[in-house]
Length: 251
Length: 251
Image (cartoon, rainbow over the protein chains, first blue to last red):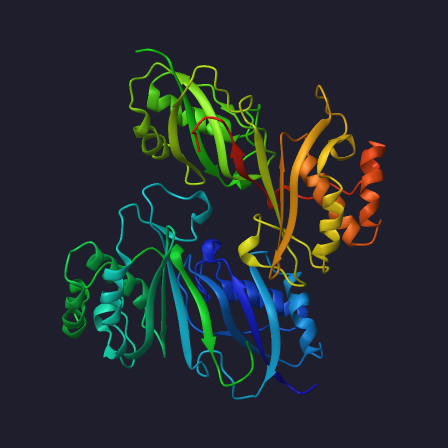
């Protein structure tokens, strides 16, 4: 059998995992998926994921790809692997893709959504699914702060200190903050994200809503490239990968 | 301080609990709430709940009441008790009610909602929150079966075998089955429910949709008062208490 490159569309609740990435001494989504896939295709499997997600972060949509010489029909893979996966990871589609396809390298843009449950009292159904923030947040002020992040910038002020990447420049396509009842949703789309960038941007919008600085100051904070000038990194349980864009029809 | 009767409006995710009711050797919602309340009011507390819920069943809305001689202002109780409760139980309102008020005896009607995730593949976000049913269900057939339950009937055919209550006659006010994408919601309202009645009625609607009997046969099944003629008791994780009605302003 010719080697095939297979893209998997999946979703997962990240609460029980130490993020996507395989690590020592901690269960990751990738490792759990690779184990299940290995028993389906009868050889060890290495998966490439669309991006790192931290411990406790969720994915409504996620793309991973792997290579196999197995003869299993592509459309049989989701059901076969799901029976071997825990319920909090579900493969919803498998697509054969060209050899050069790579879940992270071929990704054109990504959307993350950060959810805040903003009510004086908590909500049992959002535990580990949204960040509970009891003080009222004015989402229109948050939006004015979020607007400062849109466009092409050096995002050093909102990336985890001590992380190194080739370039801290990214393009944010949109950053929309909406409220439905007690739930605030922050949807941000970019060509790529630095480590902790979404959670630090949301923390900065929350600081603006709290009056720690004016929402328009966020432009200067971003220009300062100083992580300590921006807001805090908010907790992981409110963060979801929600959309991905590829040239290939993998979604 | 005069003894007061306090009604609490709360919500809980039932996954971690053996139902509402206090039992030996298993953690119940009532016991967890009573422990937290006791430390707030500084004396042992007994709560009366709006109804039994089984292990794994949730409540978007639930009413309980208790008596206290504590001087704590009523509107301070929710926050005070929430800081002592696990995150999966949240008290959202406290109301002083007349001495004769009783969360179960004063309840005029209740609505339960049963959720079915009906798609060939599962959904990680609905684990323990909906029943995953991979075969397609026609909700219009389910509705025709559900219609047979509406009205005043002897519901012996859909109550747990071996349970005894004064009378098996109840009045179902409505039983509406709707689909939104892959999620089927079965909303049923009655003046009271027998043990396992909602889950057995939903199982009967599913059996009708599967063609095990015609939906119109459900009337004869109900008249037979024979539990084995009806459908199975579906799993608890899809069941939610969703609405309650009282003459008092406790909601």
